[in-house]
Length: 135
Image 1 (cartoon, rainbow, N blue to C red):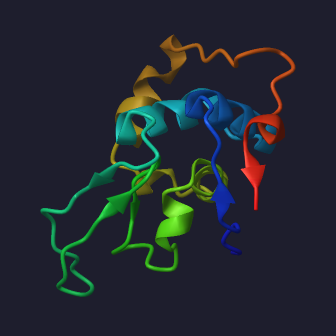
Image 2: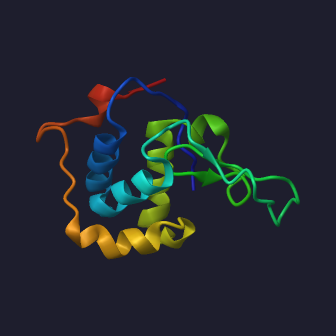
C-alpha cells in the first residue's frame, strides 16, 4: 500500500473532511467520524499511548494524530503523515476499506453506536479540496 504524500492542513473542520472523504471512498462515514472523534477528539496534533511499551522494539510507543496511528504497529507512517488531517485520513480510510477496523480500540464501541449517529457535512457542496491544500 502506498502511503499518501504529506499535506499542508489549512484551518477547517476535520469532522467534515473525514465524513466527506469517507463517503467518497465508500467507507461508512458515521463509523469513520466516530473513530476519529473517540481516538483524538478531532485533534490533528493528539499524542497518546506514551505510557505503553512497544512489544516489537521495547521502546515507548506513541499514537499520533487524528486517528492515533501507532508508531509501534505502523512504523512505516512518518509523523508528517500521522499528524496531517488529509494524509492521516487517507491512510486510515484505506485501512478501514481494506477491513482493518479492529486496529482502532474504539471500533467496537463506534460500531455499536453508529446506527444512532447522523453525521452532517457542512454543506451538500462540500469539497475537501477547497478546504485542504496538498503540497
